[in-house]
Length: 56
Image 1: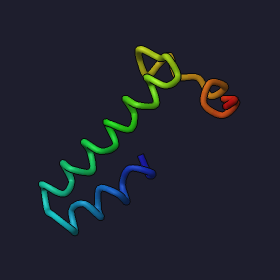
Image 2: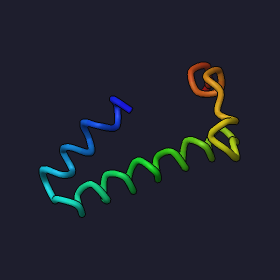
Image 3: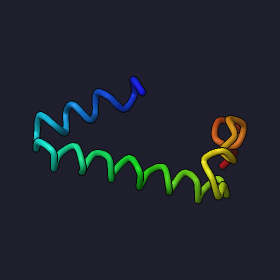
Image 4: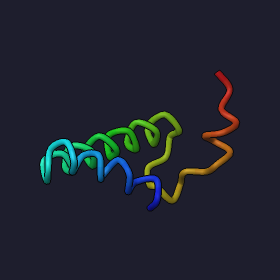
């Protein structure tokens, strides 16, 4: 929650409610991308090992 608070405040400062909505949509998009890259269908399926130990 702490990691989300600051970007939301920046969005609020820059664009009011629309700024907060924009930040939320951006974070949701990034989460979807991470889930797709790791092969997870739900947030519960995300595992630390899949993200940290990924080999490129």
